[in-house]
Each structure stands twice: as C-alpha cells, then as structure tokens.
Length: 157
Image 1: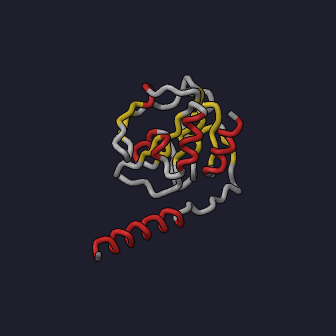
Image 2: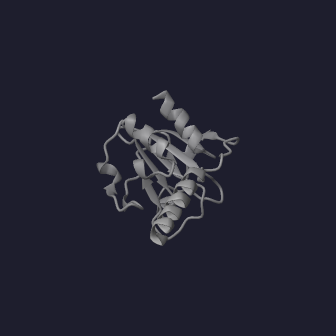
Image 3: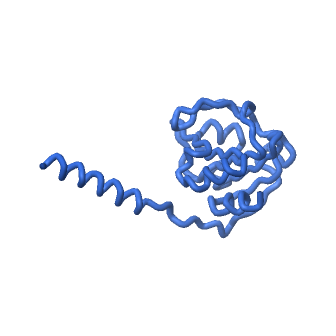
C-alpha cells in the first residue's frame, strides 16, 4: 500500500509541476532588425558547423535541409558545455512543432564556441535571431529577439 501511495504522490507532483512550468513572458520591446553582426551580413551564407544537440542528435548544418532556417542565440551565459537544441528538442514545444510543420529548422543555441564563430558578443548584443532561406543564405537578422517574434515569423510562412 505504501508503494502505491508513493508512486501516486510522485505521479501527482510530476504532473502538477509540468503544468505549472511555463516560460516567463519575454520582453521584446527592444526588438530590432540589424544588417550586420561582426563580419556577417545580410546575403551571406550561414557559417557551417557540426555539433551534437543536448538530446544527442548529431548534425552538420550544411547537411540539414529545410525551407528556411532559424538560428536563435539565446541570452544566457555561454557555457563550455554543449547547449544546442534543434526543432522538437526546444523547450517551447509549440515553437518546435510549428517550425517542423512549416518545413523549417529551428536551432536554439547558447554554446560559447558558436557565439564566437558567429561573432556574437553577449556583452554587446542579446538574443540574436538569424533567419536564412533554404540555401542557408541570411535574409534577416535581429537583436533583442524572443520566442514571440519567432512565432510571428512562422505565422507569416
């Protein structure tokens, strides 16, 4: 009987905490389109990289195929540990699902080396969003982005 009660308690607590865990509302008030990040500008190709996502999905950017690519460099302290999420791995599952439904690829990145490769200084630029076409050519770039702005873009597709 005690085992059943403990299992029920863990089950109830797990369900309750999952329902309560909502990401905080993001402030996109300073959302701004930009033309250039370091040496990377509109019209350039995405810089290729290979990585393994947080969920052990091994990929090379140049080998991914999609109608569009969204790279979202989140405003968090970069770590030496891997911090890469792709499509359905994204914490906001609706965002990942909507990207897949629209035949795109979404990468949420916060890995120190990738920030360096893309010339993103977290001290100067927060929450960088890069949108590229199916040929991985950069079409738009933004700073101070948030998930709501990504959803706006997806709704236009």
